[in-house]
Structure formats: C-alpha cells, structure tokens
Length: 114
Length: 113
Image (cartoon, rainbow over all chains, first blue to last red):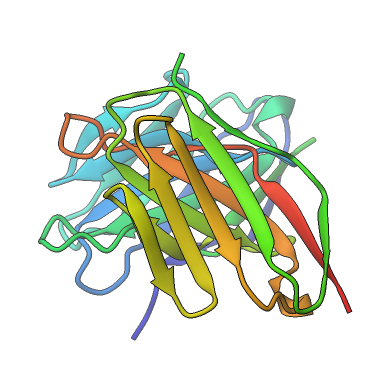
C-alpha cells in the first residue's frame, strides 16, 4: 500500500531559478495539499488541490503555483527562487469520502537555494 | 490572527514516565484537532485526531480536548526513548470552507533512558 510519494528528495537551486516538485497521493486519496516547513518551525499551508483546481490558498506569493492531474497527482512550482524559499516542502493527501481519517504526509523534498 | 501555540521545550522525561504536551489555539471555529510526531529530518506522522470535547485514548496515547478553553493536550504514558521527537499540534476548521491545517511550532520531547 503506497503512501504519499514525493520527488525529488533533495534539490539544490540557484537564486532566481525555477523549481518543480512532484507528489503522488496515497491510494484512494483525491486531495493534495502542499506545506512549507522552515527549520525549527511548524509546516505552513501553501495551497490545496481538489478536482484539479486550487481549492484554498495560504499566505504565499504568486511565485508559488501548482497543478493537479486527473490521476490526483500534483506539482508545486516555485518561480524566481529566493534564499528564503529554502525549506522542507511537504505534500499531504486526504480523501473527501467519509469518514475523514486526516492527512497523510509524504517524506518531503528538501530544497536548498544558494 | 489564527494561531496555534505550543511550548517549544525541550521537554525531558525519564523512561516510563508520563509526558504531557499542551497546545492552545485562537480560532474558536476550529473543529478538528491533530497531533503529529516528527522525527528529526523526517515528515510528520499522524498520532491522534480528536473532534469532540473529552478524552480519546489509543494505546499509550491520550488526546484531551476542551473547546471552551481552546485547549488540546496529548499524554504519552510509559514514555519510551523511541518517543523522542518533535510533537506538532494542528487544528483545522473543517466544513467551514477551510481545508488547511494550522500548525504550532512543535514541542521537542526527549525521553531519557
């Protein structure tokens, strides 16, 4: 039973570049959320995708964008990278079918911007 | 400002003792409450979820919720060294047009053998 899969696991980018992170949700899940976790902080909500549309967005600039595909997998794109974008990016999946069992997190992508 | 507050710790307890982790939240509309465990360098792992006032027990873990006081806690009985991790409290509005988890900064727990 595959859980949430994220790729790549680690990434080093230069300031100003663009990056794409990928997520495959847990089997049976149809919703994907993305979180950014800076060192020593709790995860911060970026946005959530359901039915291939952005359903809700957190307090992140437009440089952060995403996409959800028909198979429920998702991408997070970050343009014009800043040093402050260095963080662990977590994907969490869930199901809209009752009962709700909570969100399952992937192992994350560690992004370092130099 | 919706916030979730946790003591950052570190909280140190001897092996076999009860560890008590606390969390307060400011958004009264919050309906769902979660405790996640995060080992260093790893992703958060769901430990407990609680939706109604009172206690919910699962093995060595007990979650307690008091919506009137806007307070949620996690008790870990018979603490083991493998419980040493950061514990994240998260809240969600659920069903009120909000689908995001708001996390605290986490409490670092250290169980001393």
